[in-house]
Image (cartoon, rainbow, N blue to C red):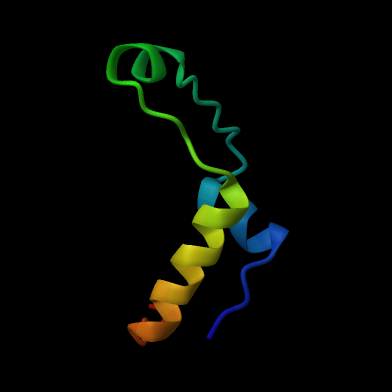
Amino acid sequence: MRLITKGVLNEYMAGAKQIFNTHKIEKELNWHARPIEESLKDSLEWIRNNDIRNG
């Protein structure tokens, strides 16, 4: 399994900065983003549990 490093993320993102503004969805739908750490933890757990292979 390939390690997720800063270099891998930069390669995936092609060096582009991703900036998101959640103010509209928070206001209109009363939705709130959860911490990135929590989302990454859950994503990695799902990948491990579902035997996702690189490529």
